Image 1 (tube, rainbow, N blue to C red):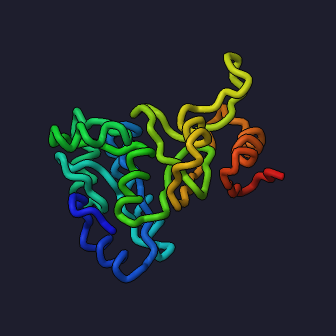
Image 2: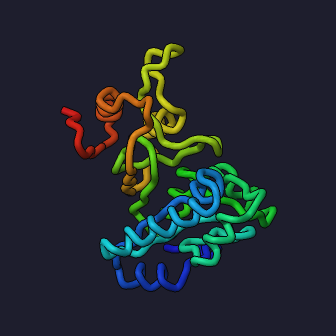
Length: 210
């Protein structure tokens, strides 16, 4: 069931109805990750790459209080140029909708809205990623996916996102998340082990997790 308070673009609506592949994209990289015009160009390149592979891109944001799945080119450009765009995590969604704010969605908020729209594949930038059984994340707006980084302050220094992913295995979504690369400081082999022993499935490219 797609919630009636979600705004879906016509292209995304038709693709879902026809059971064609749809890939969700977050919007923080547009509003907060890169400067203009690189942010706009990057967002369009990501969408074009998805179209090239035969799927429909669905860039997600909160458009002046409306959770929107599938931004238009004009909306992406406005998001890229605007000042004061809020950065909304899953926990912030209620507030930004109530206040009718323009907000870019983080990993957790994008996953939440994509799930509610019936989209099960999500692509993002830099992280160490679980591909199935992604948890209902409840993290702050400044967090992305991470992993074990060998930090000095903890024997197992996981990012808060992955930590909460592992601690809430009872509450999962049937989703796939695909990410382009790992963070520079992440130790992928150790992260693979930690994720595997906590029953969170992973697939890697160019790296053996054993």
